[in-house]
Image (tube, rainbow, N blue to C red; front, side):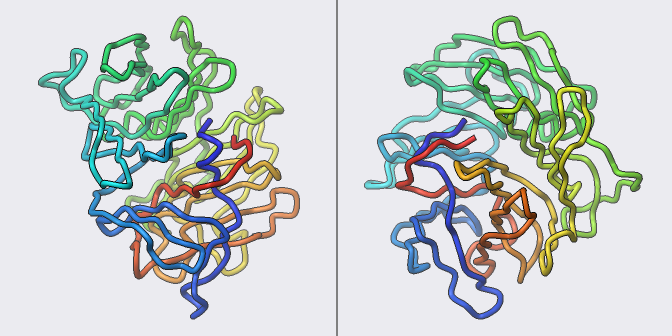
Length: 315
C-alpha cells in the first residue's frame, strides 16, 4: 500500500492530439533522464537530473523515495534537491561482491523500509540506520538479477505479494515465516512469446500485483499487454487486453493501483508516441475516464508516476 498522498487520480488530456496535457493535481514523473513535478497547467515547477526507475514513493514529509541506479534507494529533499538518505543493496547486509538489482521497495511504519533484492533473491526489512531487521528468501525458477522481481508489496495481512518477472509468476509469501502460500502463473493466452519491449512484443513478464479487498488479485501482466483479476482459486474473473480500449494500445503494462472510487490506474510503458503513459479505467464499464501523455517530454520509459497532495486510501 502506498502513502495516501501518493494517490494518483484525475489526470486528463491528450498531448498527442494537440491538446495540452494537464492535471487537476501536481504530478511527479520520471523520464528522459529527469525527475519532475508537473503542475495542473502541464508545466514543470521542479525538476532534477535522475535516471530510470521502477518504483517511487512520496513520504509524508514530502521527500521522494526513489530508485538510484541498479541497487540503491535514495531519499531526496525536493527543496534542496539533495539526497538526504540512501541505502545500497549492492554493498550492505551481506551483498558485497554480488550482482544485485532493486526494482521494488516500500516505506513501512516506524520508518522501516521493505526492499525486494533481485540477484540474491530475497525480501528484507531495514531500519533507517540500515540494520537488517528481517529477511526472507524468494522462490525463483529462472534466476537473473534483472528479472527476479518487479514490484513487490507488503499487504494488509502482513504477507508479501511479489511479481517474479522472469518466471512470469505472482507469488505470495507468509509474512512471519516466509513460506510460499500462493502463486499464480500468468497465462500466455494461447500466444507465443515474442521478444522486445514495444506493443509488438509479447510474454507474461508480470510487473505489478494488488490484493483487492474481495480477496482477489489484480495483476499487470507486463509485456502481456493486459490487466487481469484472479480469484484465490486462480480463476480469471475480469480482464482487459491490448486493443480493448478504443484508440489505445497497451504495451508493457506496469504500475497498477486501485483508486478510492474503485477505478484502476494503469501504467502503459513502451507504447510509443500518441499513446497514453497513464490510464484511469472504470472496471465496471471498461471506459477510459482519463489518460495522460507527455511523450515529447518524458519519452517511452515512464514506468512509475505519482500525484501529490491527495488524500484518500489507495490499494
